[in-house]
Image (cartoon, rainbow, N blue to C red; front, side):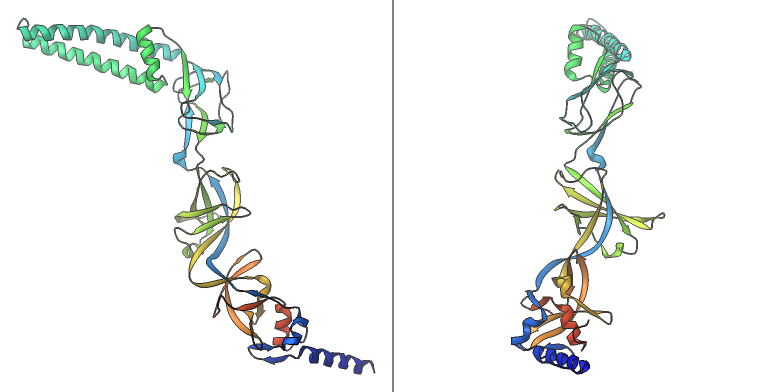
Length: 366
């Protein structure tokens, strides 16, 4: 009696659904369509294919990074910037007390004095040789000596400039002859202080690094690509940083494989200052490539699997056409697919499991 009741219920369910199974179709009468819990949606045309995800590191381009170093040995008397500070080109970052600078200034003033004396002799002998009072040989000697003084003064001036003295500082020294051991180090660019390598009161040697400054208007992503996947990438492919709206473009594909992890370096350029990421940060990215052929975006719930192949259910007048597809990429809860499809097609975005069960003649089971 109990068995007969169960059979009767099963027959009633089949009659309610009015399902007729065919090899590539699921036929459903219009009045019983809602009983399967199917939700319809439109195919969304897509233009880009998500190729792969990979780890990446945010780095500063080397040409955008500068080190402020001590141009002379001395004692750091003051530091004017901390890590993270924004500085402008020309700002004084470091004040040094350098005894070596005094010696350089003294030699410059000596060379300047000799040049002034040599200039006086040069002008005098130039006039005398024009009047025929002195011999041509003496005039040539005077010219040679003057040029030597000029060259030496210029050399010492350039040494002072290399030491960190500005043109106005040197002009002031030339005018007043007042020596000073105080030396100021200036910001070479407008940027951000990334690192400080010294403290006030520390004695540093010549060329000792003190600050690292970077312009963050452009950042790079260094991406580790599995060597077997590098062939599918190309210059110009888009890169999407996970959990952000930030995108980049691949500008370099490496020519060597890292023997430790069998990956190839790819570089992507991020244009514009980005507050959501930081230099040195490690994150995950997805590489996206433009597609030359028609592709579509569908929810993962719209896809059914059978015998290792993928299918979606396209609505028609009799029910649904079971349409084979190729899944060419995934982005979160959505997949990118290709197949004999049209952007005007209505598809089952919910209830694909029930449709698959009926397509395969499994009743309500998958």
